[in-house]
Length: 124
Image 1: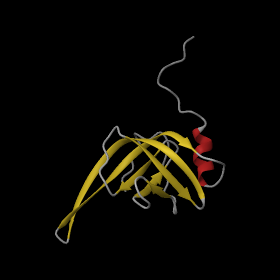
Image 2 (image 1 turned 180 degrees about the horizontal axis):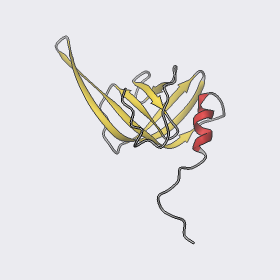
Image 3 (image 1 turned 90 degrees about the vertical axis):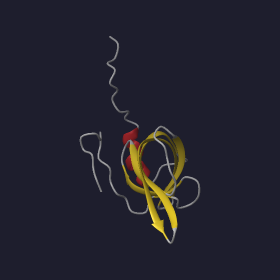
Image 4 (image 1 turned 90 degrees about the horizontal axis):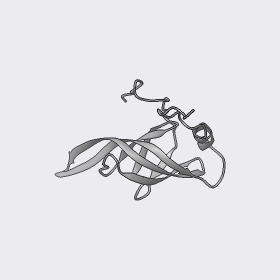
């Protein structure tokens, strides 16, 4: 799996057991996750700039996230005379909704509370 250390603000990590739902259960594979986004494998086509809502589960803890698609690589594979389309995509968190604390989301979301620095200097 390719990593892009020159463009990522923080590293991403593979975490076993994270399950995502976009349109139906198990249609999203979370490849890796970090403070500001995730890499996904999705059984449909996504477009850069689209916003989506996903439900993520990890060991009984759920969060709903709003994400914006930042990059997409579309794959097409022929199987038994039919073409199957899927894509790998990088998404950035826009908003995160959860009912309570717990699980891996504490590790991700506690750091999220410290907002990323902006490129615009503060007015003096």
